[in-house]
Image (cartoon, rainbow, N blue to C red):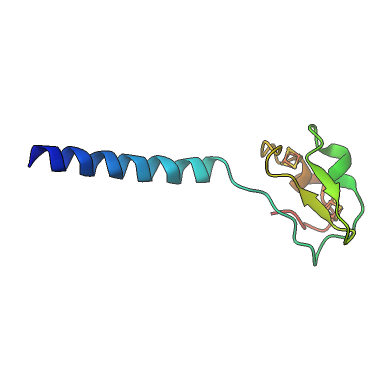
Length: 81
Ligand code: SF4
Ligand code: SF4
């Protein structure tokens, strides 16, 4: 019986830690309907995580983005969320 409680507690801790990681490391995305292709976010991104896609709209490379928030602050259309 004691083992079951320990396993349940470990499962709960794992679920909570995954949830906290998601909150602490939000994924930033571009609302393509709002993006005007100005390129300001590309210029400000310190690690070149943004590029203009084939549709002319900004795309954030989630494998590079460190969630610094600079692109959100500079976007004139509030297109990054
Ligand atoms: S700064 Fe905003 S409007 Fe300009 S390219 Fe980036 S996402 Fe689009
Ligand atoms: S949050 Fe920072 S690192 Fe990520 S795309 Fe925007 S400017 Fe680049």
